Length: 316
Image 1 (tube, rainbow, N blue to C red):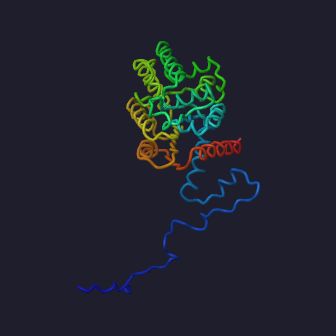
Image 2: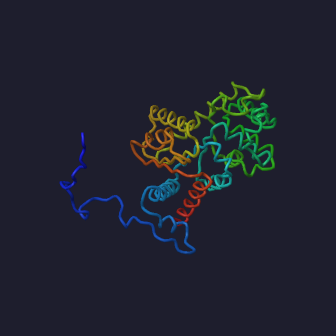
Image 3: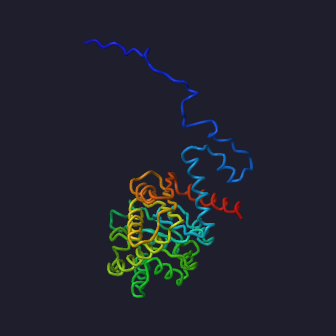
């Protein structure tokens, strides 16, 4: 059967001037002038997508901080491995970050930084002969701190932070856990057994790991219970921390705590299901706003910190 080309002559049209359009010249970026401030730079961005959302998030976090509400940060270990500890420590010292939630890998890399100023072995070079994860000091220090914390009935984050602080390691000034112990900022560590290299060491105690990490989950729930009007940032955790946050949120709502109007944001290289669903969308469905920021941590987190400090300085 022969098919003839379709005749378009009957197409119904309308005027471009009468149509709603999502993009207008009023939303366009403006050129950057020499010696511009960071605030001016953000104001020059196109009012589209992240060019709209990122400055809005900065303003929201500044409002949270000025009102004295908490800003909690959940994080994966990649944040530490790309060298962002000094940026986060500065925000902690300024009382902008009021609580940290970590996965188990974070305490490994943070403690190694404190002890030797280096971390992150080349797995491919050592996995073949079974040497991956077998650094003696890492296992001894962390498992020892965790067991001591279990005896003292404290959480894993506090136990490791205080242990590192009292040992006065040469690079303690670059450790998030040490800074938190020094400043009295709560750090909670949420562990999945078998995911961290210290679990393969003979000094590991499943009982002590479970006790101290469960203590930290309860502590984290107490922080989430006070999150009304505050903010929760998930940075570089694709699975564990988004799941922990969602469970904590449903628990505190079940217990009668009102947490239905707050800000959330997820920072990661790519969009992933759990952070987008469990951090950005579901928790703020009843109020507040969730943001998803895609980009490299080593660029986006310093930009967030600098933009937030600039915004707060303007409001002083």
